[in-house]
Each structure stands twice: as C-alpha cells, then as structure tokens.
Length: 171
Ligand SMILES: [Fe+2]
Ligand SMILES: [Fe+2]
Image 1 (cartoon, helix red, strand yellow):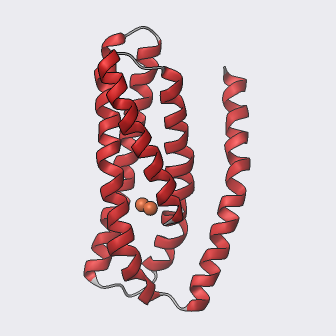
Image 2: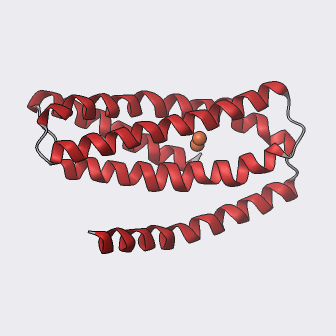
C-alpha cells in the first residue's frame, strides 16, 4: 500500500502533464522515457512483481473463496493490461522521437489509459483484495512474506543496472 501512494503521485503528475501536452501539442520524449522507466521498473517489476511472484504465489496454495480467487485473477489480468499499455507507449514514443509527430495522439491516449487504469487497480487492491487476503495467512507466513519482499527489493536495483549496462552495450 505504501508503494501505491508513490504510484498515485506519478499518475497525478502524468495527469497534470497531459494538460500541458494537449495545449502545446508537443511532448518531450525524455519525459516519456522517465515515466516509462518508473512504470516498468517501479510499478511493474518491483511492485506488481512482488504481488505476483510472492503474494499471489503464496495465496494460490491456499483454499481461497471463489470470489477472492476471481479478484486475484482479475488483478493479474490488469497487470498484463498495464504492460500492454506501457509497451504501446514505448513504441509511440520511439516513433515520435524519430520525427513521426502524428504519434503524439497515441502517446496522449496511452498516458490517459494509464491515468484511468492505475487508480481503479489500486483501489481494488487497497479496499477489496488486500483486506480480504489477510485471513488466508498466519502471522508467521505474513512475516516470511515480508522478508521475501525486502529481498526482492534489495535485488531490484542490481537487476535494473545490469539491464541498463546491457542496453548501453547494444547502443
Ligand atoms: Fe497490482
Ligand atoms: Fe498493487
């Protein structure tokens, strides 16, 4: 939930920036690169990564109610949708940077999709799924999961910069 609060700040920033982009009819591709980095590395790999690889994995071994299991499946589908939007944003930004200015409309629509998508997804987790899943885990399991979260986070910065170096070598 703490991580959701940072994602919300990014979404608010995108929303604010969208107004400016629509008035000036231009965007700085570097701004979009930075948004993409945040969404990919923080919101998706770090945050959704912990949800999918640790929390949902733990819960999938439990006898969950049909309703809770259905919500968990929806959350996974929503993560997939978030990745699809981000991929389309990456492609549109590359085209925009190479001079295809008409792709600005796609960039705007993808940013708007992110702005619409994240708050609903976050609300479903904060208000519905997270309070509901607590009953399936013992204090001990909760504690072990938290430790695994820390380790996942600790590794992420190293993964990120190994990836950066790999990309730079291919430049
Ligand atoms: Fe999520
Ligand atoms: Fe989340």
